[in-house]
Image (tube, rainbow, N blue to C red; front, top):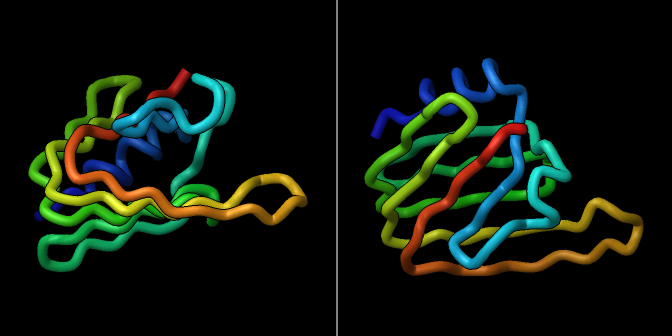
Length: 107
């Protein structure tokens, strides 16, 4: 895998985007523009952290495509999504996906 450069360049060009998970939007569509704060590739895994609060940990990711206002991830073997709320309530959670695609879309 060598997806880091594609992802970093897309965030440099677009500044951020809204997150569309395999089961729907994280938050309201185009309401939040999440910024890249960390990225790491190791073997068959890719970890991306957005806004220091949203972690996407892909295993067996096959493709990353950058097309203007869309960054596309998929297919993958497994995705673990760890999230922490942006408010003061301190909520957090984890979702796991075994199929689908993820998109980050800029407005």
